[in-house]
Length: 400
Ligand SMILES: Cc1ncc(COP(=O)(O)O)c(C=O)c1O
Image 1 (cartoon, rainbow, N blue to C red):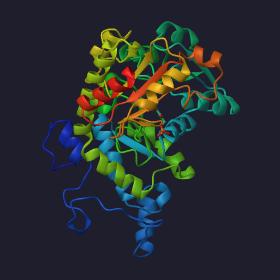
Image 2 (image 1 turned 60 degrees about the horizontal axis):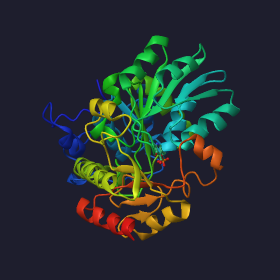
Image 3 (image 1 turned 60 degrees about the vertical axis):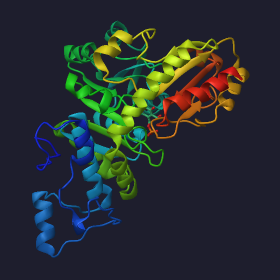
């Protein structure tokens, strides 16, 4: 049973028809082809009997916008279908989804173990916020399963990883990761935001919770923020309940932008994958580039694992400029014309940044070294502009 029956979709249809149609009614209010945006804080009942029936029978209709809205339900159903999950819970950001899951599942005295290449705000939430509520976090080197096993004890409740990681693009061996969880009876969470369900579906390997920042590829236009947790309806009920108390959910306009973005998701992702591969190969061959991190390149540490798990390698590339300090690296960033300078990834516009200027600005040089962030590092998120023009632009910037 899933929360996303789409009876009019022929059984067994592929990813692209799912992105366009899954979770939607064939005929919608007003006979519109698109789902409507409901700007309503509350939803009314015809009479007291209808209200009592709703509360007593938990009927599938809206009551109050802190518990969701009809457009959001369609977006959740579509996201669950794309990841092969039973149900999805949407949040106001990717970080809100991470926090929503951890706050629903953990209590004082519980512990989590995570790979140290997880998104820096996820690490911060675990160590600083959960720490204040008596939950300990153990960070172990990315993809070091022995270190992860050594950090497990009888208080461990959750194993956490991203795949691929950001910005080093390490790829997790999901079978080993899940086996570790099963051996000790511990649940597992994977954030495959950089892969998306097009390139990786962790639930297929037995992961318990998938978390995405939908702000990135899934919505895809750098115009809304959201996050989602996908998994079994039973496991996600406590998340939905807590979200209803806290109200950290997307609003109807954002839900619509997400739905609209998802219509072209498969097309966009194909282009991100093509661009990522072509640009990574170009960068690796350029004399001013010291090293490229891209899981589709045989030079990447996790290339073998990537070939086993990823159906495409995504649009994010990290590279080091040869013999460059922070200023010389900034000159390359400033010389590009197509990618815009800014954080984030996964939108139609290419984005470029130096991690030391953006996410890691407040870190000390020692802290940066500890997480492998160097002064000559550039992170490039390929958008959907064509690869030839992106490459020509990068060539002129590197040659300048
Ligand atoms: C891998 C990953 N997970 C989660 C997040 C957080 O998502 P959001 O910015 O939507 O809160 C990010 C943001 O960059 C990310 O890169």
